[in-house]
Amino acid sequence: MLRIGAALDLRFGKNTMQFIDFLSSNGLNHIEIRKDNDYVYGEMDPIKLNRILSEHDFTVSYHAPSNEFNIASVNERTRSSCVSQIIEMGEYLHQVGSGWVNIHTGHISLTYHEGVIAKAKENKTRSLDEIAAAYETLDTGLLVENDYPEKDMIKFGTDQGDIQGILDQYSGFGMTFDIGHAHLSSVPPVRFIKDMVHRINAMHLHDNNGMHDEHLAPGKGSVEFDDVLKKIDGCCTYVLEMKAIPDIISGREFIESLASFSYY
Image (cartoon, rainbow, N blue to C red; front, side, top):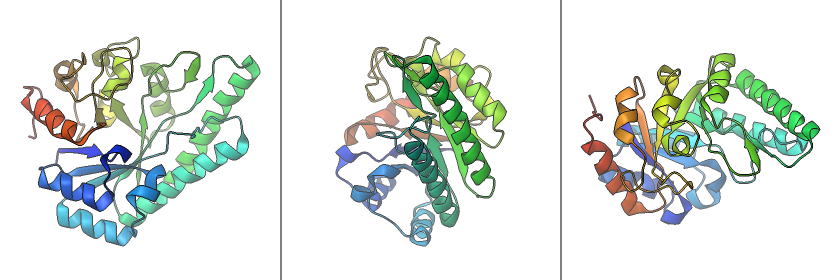
C-alpha cells in the first residue's frame, strides 16, 4: 500500500499524538519522527504506539538525530554514542513491531589534515558494520539517506556512488531518496537514482532553488518532481519534510496533482 505522510518538526508546536491526529484528519497515513526531539514530542511506550498506529492505519519511521550527530566522528565517544542511539531506535521499533530508522552517514571538515579525514572514513565504515550487525537481529528496516554537499565539508553519502557502494556492501539496508538533497548535488535527481531505483524504500519530499536546503513545499522551487516520480519503481512511502504546517497540505496537493503520482 502506498503511503504519504510527513515529518514532525519542532516548529509545529505539536507532540507525537497531536501530529498523528493532524495527519490522520487530513488523509495522510505515515509519520516520521526525529528521535533527538523526544523532550518535545514525548516518550511513548512501544505497545501504546503500536496500538495507536493500528487504530489510525498508520506506519512510522524514526529519523536518527542529525544535529551534533556523526557516525564518522573521530571522537570515539561521540561515534560510539551515535551508533548506540541508532541501535536503540531499531530495538524500540522492533518492540513496536514495524517501521524503519533513517540515517545519514557522517561528515568531516575538508580543512582537516588528510590523516583525520582518512580516520573519519574508517570510522564511517566501522559504524555501518556495527549497525548492520545489530539490525540483523531486529525486525526493523535501516534506510540510508542521501545528504547534500556543503562548502568546506566532506559529507558522506552525497552522491550516487557513495550510496550505491553502501547499498552494495550492506544488503540489508535500503534507501531513503531525498529529492531536495539530490537537487543540490552535481547530478540531476533523475540521474541520481538511475542505478538504485529498485532499492528506494521511501522518499523525502521538499523543494529548493538549487542553492540551499530550503525545505520549501513541493512546487515552490525548481525541483522537477514529475520527472523523478516517473522513474520511481517500488517506493511505497513518501514523506513531506516541511518547515510549516500549511506546507504539508499544499505540498501534498501538488504531489497528488502530478500525472506521475498515483496511489495505485
